[in-house]
Length: 282
Ligand code: KIV
Image (cartoon, rainbow, N blue to C red; front, side):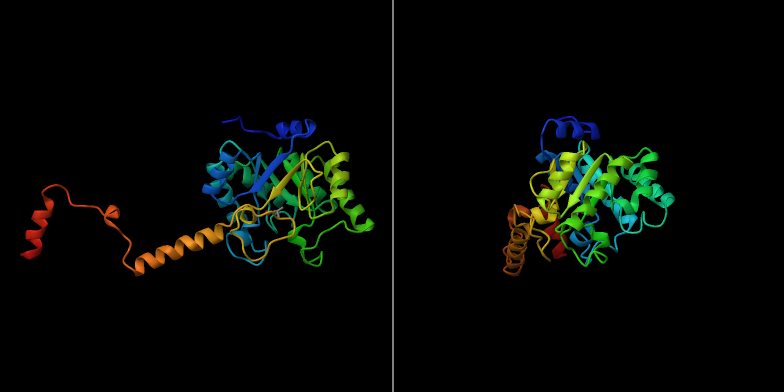
């Protein structure tokens, strides 16, 4: 197995022009598949609220849920760079709470970095977490936790004024010291401008190809999340279809008494069957 990457390896990949492959994961088995597939980074995203718990959005997700899922992912992918995602209200209230909650991800789930949403508006939080010695990934553009203020899950940076705000957020986060930056749902030209300007890895989700790496939500990639599919998603499998077909076959087999078969049964040990027959007739 290749050695686990640290944040400096990810910086080196940017310098060498190697693209970084990043996916979300929320559980142990998916993390094992992703590590076997060779992803460079895993995000235990608060998208788990929609993809795992069936909430309408990410806002209800709690710190405790994020920790439990991050622990499972860490166990499944011990050799991969794992990023914990700070859920809504885990960092909005104060710098102190932001540091306490970011620290929980490292102490309880042994993640390598944390991600939080926002730019200029969260700079004191970012600085406080960095001062605690924690690697921070910024997240700008479309920030789902504040989608209410953005008027919904809408792409950002599509006008000059909006693009300038995204660039200002990127600059502010870099100056604060973030080591990684995620740009979500912005035009490729805006993402490429930020990628060229900043010396840290600039990763994109729905931000075109001209970035240092790509993130997708594993439930979109594997086709297990069915509520909606964003424009930027490429679906690589239809696990919902495969799973439903397999489960329907099981239901048919049970109803037709075609399962279990002989091969699925435990048999009595040598000589015990006769004894049991006598017992059952007595
Ligand atoms: O929670 C998540 O998966 C995310 C992505 C949408 C970027 O933050």
